[in-house]
Length: 317
Length: 294
Image (cartoon, rainbow over all chains, first blue to last red; front, top):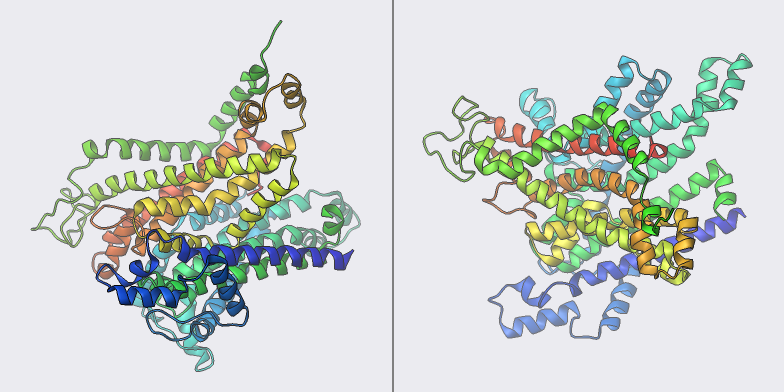
């Protein structure tokens, strides 16, 4: 049963990835008019247009273009940039770590805020701390991430002069400088992520705290800390893991935006540059990599979800 | 006593009154309704209410701090920020309503077909396509759609509409599955109603509450997405007033003219909070089972 569940999830993920490749491949096909002319501009000569069409593979039948694009992508060949003529694969590999590091750091910050706040709110519903936590959480969901980035730069960089306003140092070069550059973007994404997580952790905890097994645990005379951590939180984790998984998609979306505002060299800023330059192969590559990443994360969450609660497989399949 | 099938399918008036009562007692929901109500009035009557034309440049007063003449200050061109925010409300609401309208119509339609059809292949084809769209980080999918269609506010609406379609499809499908074997649907079928008539006249009214709730919540995300796209220069184009674009323009001057960025940001935040509160209130009023789900 265990292996069957995991195989079913793997097949589903494979189908999603296949669908993602079709959608991403269609980006260039759906450009109204002639993508070659759109990318080169109205002044382009017929000769240049022909060369660009050939370069983009538009002179071949659609299925042939797709098969060739996908088989190249599977082998790590994502084509060449129309602007720099450089292979795209290494550019993506260069940018991906920044995006992942930012997302990871933001998730950690988000969890560090959300877990204590969500649990305390659930333990004391209706009190001042609960009301404040829920208000801050509503605020975090409503605040535009790019606006919060600017406000944090104004406070921590311009006014207090504690942190650099933008720029980037790779983690391998200097950890301290890397952290200095990453902390503001990660705080922005982390705060927004914490706002959503807090609400879910609170409601998941409230739900488990009402269960009979928690009453029994208390009646047995177990210490409150044991009741909360081992009985209530452990069962609430099923909901929380699902939310963390869904959060990763939302978090990656926020990271794309925040990277651009802080001029961090990640996939988000690479995508925006590519859209500005109408560099279609680069747009396709960045979107493809991010979507595959999300699918892999969702697959990972499904498997963790199942490991935490094997009943899931029984219920669904 | 005779009763037509459509009468049977509509929610009883007592239930509506009960839901309205629950909504009126929901303090945050009422606050949300108040915020959105004011915003709609501002959007409708902006040209009458705004102190100045949004593009009028007061050459003698660039970077003016908030004063009695310019309540929220002016920007680098001397344009009145309050007037631009009031006109910007139009853009934000228009983008929000149209994009979520697209998502709700297409998504609910697809979800209803997927949930109602007896052919598993159709259900699978629709829902797996929705899964594929959900695999893209939302803003990235919107940017990709704009990369195809080009920059501009109309394309931003389509992009945001595409992004939120799968959410409505999932909700609608789930709801149809839960009601499609109810007696009133079987009765309609027995009386010879076509599938289309059953879906629209009998099932749709019964699955509307969660769709209405999702519409309100999605409006808040759509307004944030429009602001982000305009902030990056992909949505509303200058000189049209859009809150995201105003924030983008304020960045260069943020250190010395903080009001240029503070007020448009607050406008976005208040609007998003308004729709979220309204959505929470509607959810608790229309479908108390959904409380704490989202």
